[in-house]
Image 1 (cartoon, rainbow, N blue to C red):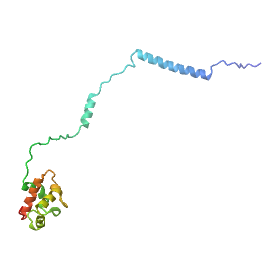
Image 2 (tube, rainbow, N blue to C red):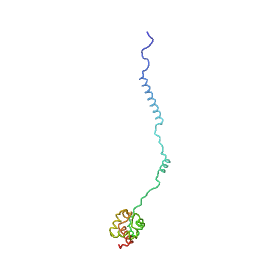
Image 3 (cartoon, helix red, strand yellow):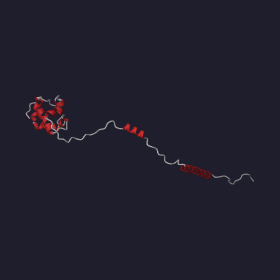
Image 4 (cartoon, one colour):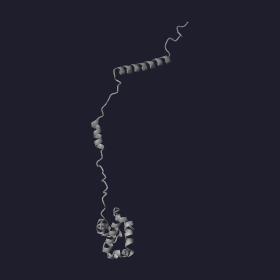
Length: 160
């Protein structure tokens, strides 16, 4: 006979792996239990870093603040034709910019005056060619625009 023993006297691979797994899980549970007993796993309360938050808010605040004023509900005072011309119309009509007829130039105003006062006022309110509506000032009333037309036309010889 031979001296080789065919009976298995050790552990199988599955038994070794199972024992290792159970040992690791058991050790982890033991550590968690000890940590819980001694209060290591309790929540740690951390105060908010108020100085850091304040500095961040200071750094990101807007440079300026826009405040809208309340609209004036008082009665609007109508401007005279001369005031409207000086404030809005004179920019183009004093120098003749963009073919605007110069104030007081009878040759340029003559064909326009011949169209009639109502036509001139309509063109001034609605705009014509390169002239914007109301001379570019939308705050003007129809009466103010009509007064400005009358003032400029009369300065060129009209009798409106």
